[in-house]
Each structure stands twice: as C-alpha cells, then as structure tokens.
Length: 133
Image (cartoon, rainbow, N blue to C red; front, side):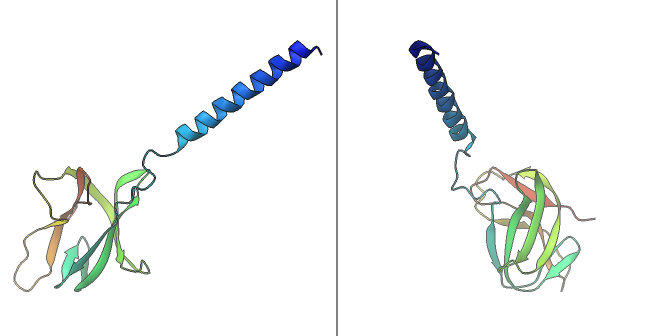
C-alpha cells in the first residue's frame, strides 16, 4: 500500500467514525429529563373508584404503564409501587382548556365511592378517560 492509500483509508475511517458518533447522538431522546410515564402522585381524603375497583382514602401513583408502546394503558398503584390496584385501557382525550386539575370526577350515588372520570398527567396535552361499563 502506498502512503496515499493509507491516508485515504484513515480519512474514510475517521469520516465513518464521525458519522457513527452523530448517529448515536441522534438516537438519544430529545428530553431525557421528561417522565415518559407521566407519573402523578395523588392523595384522596375519601374513597374513590376506578373501573372494577374501589380505593380507600390514601395516596396513589397514576402512570402510563407502557409509555413507548401503548399510551392508553394506565396503571394505578400504591405510593411505593408494591401493589397495583388498576391496570387497563383508557380513552385518550384532550385536556380541557384551562384545566389545572389532575383528575375529573364522575357522579356517584349516595354512599358510593366517587368515580374518577379522567386523569390528566402534568404538562401533557392529552389525558386518559377511564372506561366504565
């Protein structure tokens, strides 16, 4: 091999290495600090209900169960994540204009737990309407 061939091979390797680094940097999520699960810690002072379950007063975590593959699946668990109380499909809905509340409630009959109609993750443009049957 001549010196010219070696220099050209070296330049090509450097160019390919630079492209690989750019490709790797391009694969990094745009906002690594964002909570893709959209986890929200909510405390209720009286019983609430979700489809198929009634939860007592307490603190619960609401989050997207599969944020990269199925945004519509929501998981509600204990504040330490040891117990999952609800996991199911929801309907994606727009956050109502001017809404600052994390949840919206449905109507309940006297003495029944108040149903959560929808959950709106913080700083998200879409929320999750729970599907009651």
